[in-house]
Image (tube, rainbow, N blue to C red):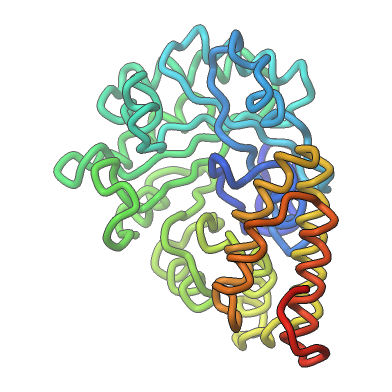
Length: 330
């Protein structure tokens, strides 16, 4: 088992904080499907921007058993410390610092993975945040700015020295973005260097891959990101495989439908009818992409404009898949 501060987690499988994906409804679904920890979407450290609707929703606490972890991003130590302190006052259980995001709009503000070029600033930010709150502080990084300047081991040492209690490492540099294949040698080296828990991230898309990465890196945990979109039950699949060495049986159509419908209902409730319908289109597309006649179904589904119509369409589609009726949607 793995701990973050005083919190004993149910398991060592984490959901990655993905902007536009890892909102409160998705975190609740993934937690129900076996994720031991979920981290909220990246939030700017500029609290003047928190009053807009998008940033307000990012701070809503998910109804899960694990701790509420808020991830903040920025490049100013004082502003980062203030953001951490304000989130603590608002009910956060832990603070995660983003030093891994490769998005251009984040890099333009010298935040995210841009910080990997400046280890002195990294230390200033980490000390400021850790000293500003009594909550556990974790850190998410990449292996470096580019393949020729991988400094993940150095950054990990700094993080541990500053009081960071858990470190997640994506096995790519900023330059690699999400292209190519993640490498795990740097994560293994980091694990050998520090004593705080190290979580491996990058290209974990199957239970077998999860087992291989654990064996290679000796990491304390795994973080799954894109592979959970449309397949949140991957956490249960990984847990089962690591425990038994055998694959979990394929999820049934009935169980799949139940999970999707539950997720769509949460989206409708969380965002309201109009925005909830819009967000549901993206998530449902991920859920059905490998199913029979999914393209035809999504063409119809994307034209629907009411929550009830979306739910009725899902019902009809899964009845069709199970052979109960002969049409995809009315």
